[in-house]
Image (tube, rainbow, N blue to C red; front, side):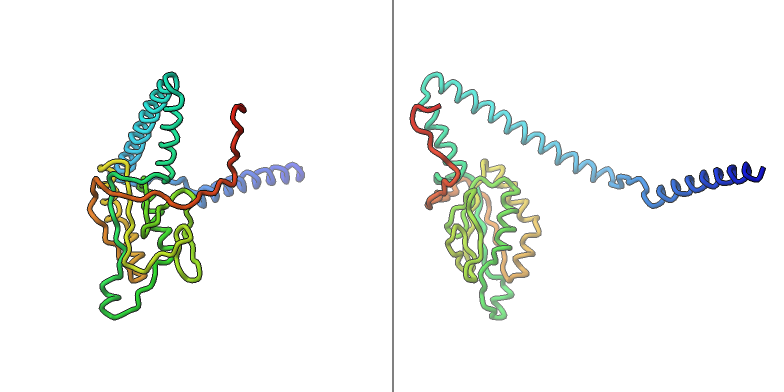
Length: 240
């Protein structure tokens, strides 16, 4: 009789313990809820819609390019190949850029000039943050202090000086030129850079950004250094 009572009592304790454990876990890990208001959700939806529209535009552009190349290959493979090579050169910066864009002037802050502080060069970290911010807004071409940046360009500290493509960046003031695909993209980049907090980071380093108005005839020189072909192999003619 006593054994049966102990078994029942133990079983009841197990049930109670399990219920307490479930309740504790629920309190410690409450279900997360979306607390954003309607306006925040509408803004997020607008961003996703804009991204979707941009992706569709890119797909349409690629389809048109593919159709054009298919027609050109049928008519003249050499012309199609030359056009492809020229397009690739433009994309990676081996050709000069002439089109819409804007210019940023990096100069000493007025406060640093007023108190007579020595003008320091821009740090690599700060320049990298600015370039990342620019690329986030889909820059087509970038030139820093006359040095064209491409996919392999490196920003480094060499003997206390910030370098781009192994060439030193002079102390402020200097110019950063940014090319875009369209004038609308240039205006959008201007507005986004004006609203960005990147200017505060420059102010901490006694520098300021003067963002110029977008234009249609920005000129950026081509990359003029040798490109490493370490991982490229040339296939002999006639081999497939």
